[in-house]
Amino acid sequence: MRPNQQDLSGKIAAVTGAGRGLGSAIAEVLADRGAHVILNDRTLEPARKAAESIRGQGGNASPIAFDVADATQVEDAFRQILRDHGRVDILINNAGIGDFVSFPEISSEKWDRMINIHLKGSFNCCQAVLAGMKAQKYGKIVNVSSVAGKRGDFIGNAHYTAAKAGIIGLTKSLALYAAPFGINVNAIAPGLVATELSDEMSSEMKATTISRIPAGRLGRPDEIARAAAFLVSEDASYIFGETLSVNGGSYMD
Ligand SMILES: NC(=O)c1ccc[n+]([C@@H]2O[C@H](COP(=O)([O-])OP(=O)(O)OC[C@H]3O[C@@H](n4cnc5c(N)ncnc54)[C@H](O)[C@@H]3O)[C@@H](O)[C@H]2O)c1
Image (cartoon, rainbow, N blue to C red; front, top):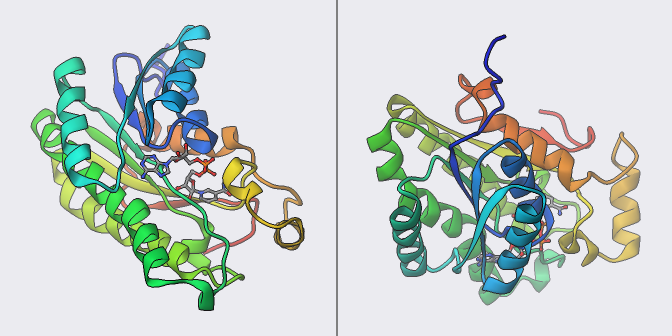
Protein backbone atom coordinates (compact mmCIF):
# COMPACT_ATOMS: atom_id res chain seq x y z
CA MET A 1 0.00 0.00 0.00
CA ARG A 2 1.29 3.46 -0.87
CA PRO A 3 1.12 6.08 1.93
CA ASN A 4 -2.07 8.13 2.05
CA GLN A 5 -1.05 11.48 0.54
CA GLN A 6 -3.83 13.28 2.39
CA ASP A 7 -2.74 12.07 5.82
CA LEU A 8 -1.75 14.98 8.08
CA SER A 9 -0.77 12.98 11.17
CA GLY A 10 1.79 14.77 13.31
CA LYS A 11 1.29 18.11 11.54
CA ILE A 12 0.55 21.31 13.45
CA ALA A 13 -2.01 23.46 11.64
CA ALA A 14 -3.18 26.98 12.51
CA VAL A 15 -6.50 28.20 11.12
CA THR A 16 -7.56 31.82 11.61
CA GLY A 17 -11.18 32.83 12.05
CA ALA A 18 -11.97 29.22 12.95
CA GLY A 19 -14.70 29.89 15.52
CA ARG A 20 -17.41 29.30 12.93
CA GLY A 21 -18.16 29.10 9.20
CA LEU A 22 -15.49 28.09 6.72
CA GLY A 23 -12.68 28.28 9.28
CA SER A 24 -14.27 25.78 11.64
CA ALA A 25 -15.11 23.49 8.69
CA ILE A 26 -11.48 23.64 7.48
CA ALA A 27 -10.23 22.94 11.03
CA GLU A 28 -12.52 19.89 11.24
CA VAL A 29 -11.28 18.39 7.98
CA LEU A 30 -7.61 18.97 8.90
CA ALA A 31 -8.22 17.35 12.30
CA ASP A 32 -10.03 14.43 10.63
CA ARG A 33 -6.90 13.89 8.57
CA GLY A 34 -4.71 13.73 11.66
CA ALA A 35 -3.41 17.28 12.21
CA HIS A 36 -3.36 18.98 15.60
CA VAL A 37 -5.33 22.10 14.79
CA ILE A 38 -4.95 25.45 16.52
CA LEU A 39 -8.17 27.37 16.09
CA ASN A 40 -7.96 31.15 16.22
CA ASP A 41 -10.69 33.71 16.53
CA ARG A 42 -10.78 37.31 17.67
CA THR A 43 -12.20 36.21 21.02
CA LEU A 44 -11.55 32.94 22.82
CA GLU A 45 -15.09 31.62 23.29
CA PRO A 46 -15.96 30.69 19.67
CA ALA A 47 -12.50 29.19 19.13
CA ARG A 48 -12.79 27.23 22.39
CA LYS A 49 -16.22 25.84 21.43
CA ALA A 50 -15.10 24.83 17.93
CA ALA A 51 -11.95 23.17 19.34
CA GLU A 52 -14.06 21.34 21.94
CA SER A 53 -16.34 20.04 19.18
CA ILE A 54 -13.31 18.66 17.28
CA ARG A 55 -11.97 17.03 20.45
CA GLY A 56 -15.44 15.54 21.03
CA GLN A 57 -15.08 13.77 17.68
CA GLY A 58 -11.66 12.40 18.64
CA GLY A 59 -9.50 15.06 16.99
CA ASN A 60 -6.67 17.17 18.42
CA ALA A 61 -7.42 20.86 18.72
CA SER A 62 -6.60 23.91 20.84
CA PRO A 63 -8.05 27.42 20.80
CA ILE A 64 -6.22 30.75 20.78
CA ALA A 65 -7.54 34.32 20.62
CA PHE A 66 -5.93 37.13 18.64
CA ASP A 67 -6.89 39.77 16.11
CA VAL A 68 -5.19 38.95 12.81
CA ALA A 69 -5.11 42.66 11.90
CA ASP A 70 -2.90 43.46 14.91
CA ALA A 71 0.72 42.57 14.09
CA THR A 72 1.82 42.59 17.74
CA GLN A 73 -0.98 40.24 18.80
CA VAL A 74 -0.15 37.93 15.87
CA GLU A 75 3.58 37.83 16.73
CA ASP A 76 2.84 37.13 20.41
CA ALA A 77 0.32 34.42 19.54
CA PHE A 78 2.62 32.55 17.16
CA ARG A 79 5.47 32.80 19.69
CA GLN A 80 3.10 31.13 22.16
CA ILE A 81 2.10 28.46 19.58
CA LEU A 82 5.78 27.70 18.91
CA ARG A 83 6.42 27.41 22.67
CA ASP A 84 3.46 25.05 23.10
CA HIS A 85 3.74 22.97 19.92
CA GLY A 86 7.29 23.45 18.66
CA ARG A 87 6.38 24.16 15.04
CA VAL A 88 3.72 25.30 12.58
CA ASP A 89 3.45 23.15 9.45
CA ILE A 90 0.21 24.48 8.02
CA LEU A 91 -1.34 27.95 8.07
CA ILE A 92 -4.81 28.73 6.76
CA ASN A 93 -5.48 32.47 6.55
CA ASN A 94 -9.27 32.44 6.67
CA ALA A 95 -10.33 35.18 9.12
CA GLY A 96 -12.50 37.78 7.46
CA ILE A 97 -15.57 39.95 7.52
CA GLY A 98 -18.27 40.69 4.98
CA ASP A 99 -19.74 44.08 4.18
CA PHE A 100 -22.35 44.00 1.46
CA VAL A 101 -22.45 47.65 0.49
CA SER A 102 -22.10 49.34 -2.87
CA PHE A 103 -19.22 51.57 -3.86
CA PRO A 104 -20.58 54.98 -2.73
CA GLU A 105 -21.14 53.59 0.80
CA ILE A 106 -17.50 52.57 1.30
CA SER A 107 -16.08 55.08 3.79
CA SER A 108 -12.38 55.48 4.40
CA GLU A 109 -12.85 53.66 7.76
CA LYS A 110 -14.62 50.73 6.07
CA TRP A 111 -11.84 50.53 3.48
CA ASP A 112 -9.11 50.43 6.13
CA ARG A 113 -10.90 47.86 8.28
CA MET A 114 -11.49 45.52 5.34
CA ILE A 115 -7.92 45.72 4.04
CA ASN A 116 -6.47 45.42 7.54
CA ILE A 117 -8.37 42.26 8.44
CA HIS A 118 -8.20 40.37 5.14
CA LEU A 119 -4.99 41.47 3.48
CA LYS A 120 -2.79 42.75 6.29
CA GLY A 121 -4.12 39.97 8.54
CA SER A 122 -3.00 37.33 6.03
CA PHE A 123 0.37 39.09 5.64
CA ASN A 124 0.83 39.28 9.43
CA CYS A 125 0.26 35.55 9.90
CA CYS A 126 2.44 34.57 6.91
CA GLN A 127 5.24 36.74 8.32
CA ALA A 128 4.86 35.09 11.75
CA VAL A 129 5.23 31.50 10.46
CA LEU A 130 7.68 31.96 7.63
CA ALA A 131 11.01 31.80 9.52
CA GLY A 132 10.01 28.54 11.22
CA MET A 133 8.81 26.98 7.98
CA LYS A 134 12.03 27.99 6.23
CA ALA A 135 14.12 26.49 9.03
CA GLN A 136 12.23 23.18 8.90
CA LYS A 137 12.17 23.25 5.07
CA TYR A 138 8.48 22.43 5.10
CA GLY A 139 5.31 24.47 5.11
CA LYS A 140 1.86 24.76 3.57
CA ILE A 141 0.03 28.07 3.48
CA VAL A 142 -3.47 28.55 2.08
CA ASN A 143 -4.97 32.02 1.90
CA VAL A 144 -8.73 32.38 1.56
CA SER A 145 -9.57 34.73 -1.29
CA SER A 146 -12.97 34.82 -3.01
CA VAL A 147 -14.58 34.65 -6.42
CA ALA A 148 -14.98 38.40 -5.87
CA GLY A 149 -11.20 38.79 -5.93
CA LYS A 150 -11.03 37.15 -9.36
CA ARG A 151 -14.13 38.52 -11.04
CA GLY A 152 -15.15 41.64 -9.07
CA ASP A 153 -18.46 41.76 -7.29
CA PHE A 154 -21.81 42.74 -8.80
CA ILE A 155 -22.84 44.85 -5.82
CA GLY A 156 -19.75 47.06 -5.98
CA ASN A 157 -18.19 46.31 -2.59
CA ALA A 158 -14.76 47.20 -3.90
CA HIS A 159 -13.06 47.14 -0.49
CA TYR A 160 -13.83 43.40 -0.11
CA THR A 161 -12.95 42.72 -3.74
CA ALA A 162 -9.67 44.65 -3.54
CA ALA A 163 -8.68 42.84 -0.34
CA LYS A 164 -9.43 39.45 -1.93
CA ALA A 165 -7.61 40.37 -5.18
CA GLY A 166 -4.70 41.55 -3.02
CA ILE A 167 -4.64 38.14 -1.35
CA ILE A 168 -4.14 36.54 -4.78
CA GLY A 169 -1.12 38.82 -5.37
CA LEU A 170 0.24 38.12 -1.88
CA THR A 171 -0.15 34.39 -2.57
CA LYS A 172 1.75 34.49 -5.87
CA SER A 173 4.54 36.69 -4.59
CA LEU A 174 5.09 34.71 -1.40
CA ALA A 175 4.84 31.44 -3.37
CA LEU A 176 7.73 32.57 -5.61
CA TYR A 177 9.81 33.53 -2.58
CA ALA A 178 9.01 30.48 -0.45
CA ALA A 179 9.04 27.62 -3.01
CA PRO A 180 12.84 27.13 -2.82
CA PHE A 181 12.45 26.52 0.94
CA GLY A 182 9.98 23.66 0.47
CA ILE A 183 6.95 25.79 1.26
CA ASN A 184 3.78 25.67 -0.84
CA VAL A 185 1.74 28.86 -0.79
CA ASN A 186 -1.65 28.73 -2.51
CA ALA A 187 -5.12 30.23 -2.20
CA ILE A 188 -8.73 29.19 -2.60
CA ALA A 189 -11.42 31.40 -4.09
CA PRO A 190 -14.82 30.23 -2.86
CA GLY A 191 -18.05 31.38 -4.44
CA LEU A 192 -20.98 32.14 -2.17
CA VAL A 193 -21.10 29.62 0.70
CA ALA A 194 -23.81 29.09 3.29
CA THR A 195 -22.34 30.69 6.44
CA GLU A 196 -23.26 33.50 8.83
CA LEU A 197 -21.24 35.88 6.64
CA SER A 198 -23.37 35.21 3.55
CA ASP A 199 -26.49 35.40 5.75
CA GLU A 200 -25.76 39.13 6.05
CA MET A 201 -26.81 39.46 2.38
CA SER A 202 -30.38 40.51 1.67
CA SER A 203 -32.52 37.59 0.47
CA GLU A 204 -32.98 39.39 -2.86
CA MET A 205 -29.22 39.75 -3.36
CA LYS A 206 -28.71 36.11 -2.40
CA ALA A 207 -31.39 34.90 -4.85
CA THR A 208 -29.79 36.94 -7.67
CA THR A 209 -26.37 35.48 -6.83
CA ILE A 210 -27.70 31.91 -6.76
CA SER A 211 -29.39 32.44 -10.15
CA ARG A 212 -25.89 33.10 -11.57
CA ILE A 213 -24.37 29.87 -10.15
CA PRO A 214 -24.42 27.06 -12.76
CA ALA A 215 -24.50 24.44 -9.96
CA GLY A 216 -27.76 26.11 -8.88
CA ARG A 217 -26.97 26.34 -5.17
CA LEU A 218 -24.68 27.83 -2.56
CA GLY A 219 -21.52 25.98 -1.63
CA ARG A 220 -21.32 24.04 1.63
CA PRO A 221 -18.50 24.82 4.09
CA ASP A 222 -17.24 21.21 3.88
CA GLU A 223 -16.84 21.56 0.09
CA ILE A 224 -14.55 24.54 0.59
CA ALA A 225 -12.75 22.82 3.46
CA ARG A 226 -11.85 19.78 1.36
CA ALA A 227 -10.34 22.03 -1.33
CA ALA A 228 -8.17 23.71 1.32
CA ALA A 229 -7.20 20.31 2.73
CA PHE A 230 -6.17 19.17 -0.75
CA LEU A 231 -3.84 22.15 -1.13
CA VAL A 232 -2.05 21.39 2.16
CA SER A 233 -1.72 17.69 1.33
CA GLU A 234 1.10 15.91 -0.48
CA ASP A 235 -1.34 15.46 -3.39
CA ALA A 236 -0.68 19.15 -4.07
CA SER A 237 3.08 19.04 -3.54
CA TYR A 238 3.87 20.56 -6.97
CA ILE A 239 1.24 23.32 -6.85
CA PHE A 240 2.56 26.82 -6.08
CA GLY A 241 0.89 30.23 -6.25
CA GLU A 242 -2.43 28.84 -7.50
CA THR A 243 -5.80 30.29 -6.53
CA LEU A 244 -8.21 27.39 -6.76
CA SER A 245 -11.80 28.31 -7.67
CA VAL A 246 -14.43 26.48 -5.63
CA ASN A 247 -17.52 28.25 -6.85
CA GLY A 248 -20.12 25.97 -8.44
CA GLY A 249 -19.02 27.18 -11.89
CA SER A 250 -19.93 30.80 -11.25
CA TYR A 251 -16.60 32.06 -12.61
CA MET A 252 -13.98 30.24 -14.70
CA ASP A 253 -10.55 31.62 -15.51
N1 LIG B 1 -19.20 32.70 3.04
C1 LIG B 1 -18.91 33.00 1.79
O1 LIG B 1 -19.78 33.05 0.92
C2 LIG B 1 -17.48 33.29 1.39
C3 LIG B 1 -17.17 33.31 0.04
C4 LIG B 1 -15.86 33.59 -0.36
C5 LIG B 1 -14.88 33.82 0.60
N2 LIG B 1 -15.24 33.80 1.92
C6 LIG B 1 -14.17 34.08 2.88
O2 LIG B 1 -14.05 32.98 3.74
C7 LIG B 1 -13.59 33.42 5.01
C8 LIG B 1 -14.51 32.90 6.09
O3 LIG B 1 -15.81 33.37 5.83
P1 LIG B 1 -17.10 32.80 6.57
O4 LIG B 1 -18.19 32.83 5.58
O5 LIG B 1 -16.78 31.56 7.30
O6 LIG B 1 -17.35 34.01 7.61
P2 LIG B 1 -17.90 33.98 9.12
O7 LIG B 1 -18.28 35.40 9.41
O8 LIG B 1 -18.90 32.92 9.31
O9 LIG B 1 -16.59 33.59 9.95
C9 LIG B 1 -15.47 34.42 9.97
C10 LIG B 1 -14.73 34.22 11.27
O10 LIG B 1 -13.57 35.07 11.25
C11 LIG B 1 -13.47 35.71 12.51
N3 LIG B 1 -12.75 36.98 12.41
C12 LIG B 1 -13.17 38.13 11.82
N4 LIG B 1 -12.26 39.09 11.97
C13 LIG B 1 -11.23 38.54 12.65
C14 LIG B 1 -9.99 39.03 13.11
N5 LIG B 1 -9.64 40.31 12.90
N6 LIG B 1 -9.14 38.20 13.75
C15 LIG B 1 -9.51 36.91 13.98
N7 LIG B 1 -10.67 36.39 13.58
C16 LIG B 1 -11.53 37.20 12.93
C17 LIG B 1 -14.93 35.93 12.95
O11 LIG B 1 -15.02 36.19 14.34
C18 LIG B 1 -15.56 34.64 12.49
O12 LIG B 1 -15.50 33.63 13.47
C19 LIG B 1 -13.52 34.94 4.94
O13 LIG B 1 -12.21 35.35 4.62
C20 LIG B 1 -14.46 35.26 3.79
O14 LIG B 1 -14.17 36.49 3.17
C21 LIG B 1 -16.51 33.54 2.34
